[in-house]
Amino acid sequence: MPLSFSPSKKNIKRLVSKLLAWFVFRGVNYLATGPELMADYYHQHYKIPQHKILTLYNDISMERFYPLSAQQKAISKEAILDTNKKVMLFVHTFNECRGADLLPLIAKNIKDKKLNVVIVAIGRPGDYSDKLTQEIKANNLQDYLLNLGKVPNKDIAKYYQTADLFLMPSRGEGFPRVLLESMACGCPALSFEVGGVADILPVDAIKELLIPLDNENKFVEQSIKLISDQHLLEELSKYSYQKVKQYSTDHIVDMYVDQLSRLTNS
Image (cartoon, rainbow, N blue to C red; front, side, top):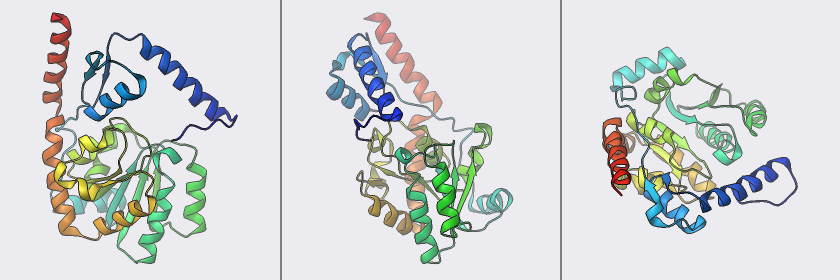
């Protein structure tokens, strides 16, 4: 989100954190970040020399997060969500910077077009929590936008496994683990082009899954287009699952060992 200099508590905290980050980054021996787009970001915006930046990826357990068959998914939807509708899933904090304000807009489109779709929203309380509740009630979206609030991490995999499309309308990210979790469950993720997302999503699916930042209308339109095209969803699911394999824990452990060995020997 763009920095604002209005004297609110939130803006003051953001400005102070930016200033502290600048001072910290002046003195680091190494900065670990990833993917490559984020390494470029820290080099350009904080002037950290490239040789001090270690590119390391987040990992995903392919044993814990995995796709279900079509039949298993249908059974799981009925058991967990009591629905046979297609599912769009949101997992994040209910903040505007995380795009929670787009959920009612998408839900209104689902309602107006009479689609057999429901948005399942999971997240920690944030600055949009109360407004989200108000929007659902004011626009009678209870059948189209289900707010589950907080869900324990140990239970989160089953929600990804029931989802047909993951929504990540964040206006700022780094290396979001939620993308890996959704992709590992065979659920394609629609996202704004922020942070390192372009490096994480499968190359063959970028055209369909990556939306220019701040083009909110396009994000809403694309979410409806994708959820309405089962063949395209299945294709994007295959691309996503193939790509996420490179982030499996076994592969990422090797990456960490290689980087640590390089530092030890340098």
